[in-house]
Length: 213
Image (cartoon, one colour):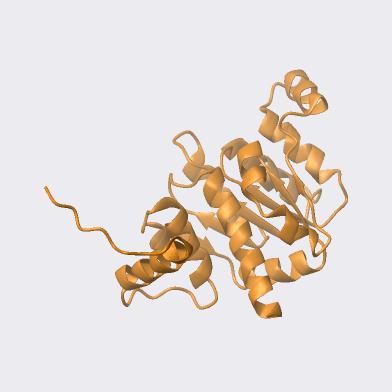
């Protein structure tokens, strides 16, 4: 069977991918200012459901961009998400990326308190005293703990990217974040992942860089 391949140069593959995404979205209405984030999530996952399940609190994108420009740091719940974030781009604005999941003090705290490491790592992040954006792509317990910290007045994050993937308490944890008084970008339902969390951070960084040009 003969297969017809598109003749696309290597440096043009991403551009062509976005052309296809835009074409297949057709006249789908996206929230103004969120289009690049939605399209990059689709590009990362080849899943057009993100055009419907990504939810943004009012002005979340602009607030996140302003926070990054003012030196906000990123906290992730997996090393995979940390690895996927463009740390060089973030460093231009004074930010760093943290993941405390492998830290010995986090492991000890989780064992002592009978919690997950994700829960303990959110407690550690809350003690940093820095402007923070949370990019959560794996652990719903991280979102639950963030909600508790916010409600108890112990944390005031610049943004929560809530996109854990899975089945147990995933949907519920995302709904909690959408009830909190905090800027958020949440993928409703079961879909998400560390790659999506990193993708959203990188989309924000890309948007800032484009504005500088």
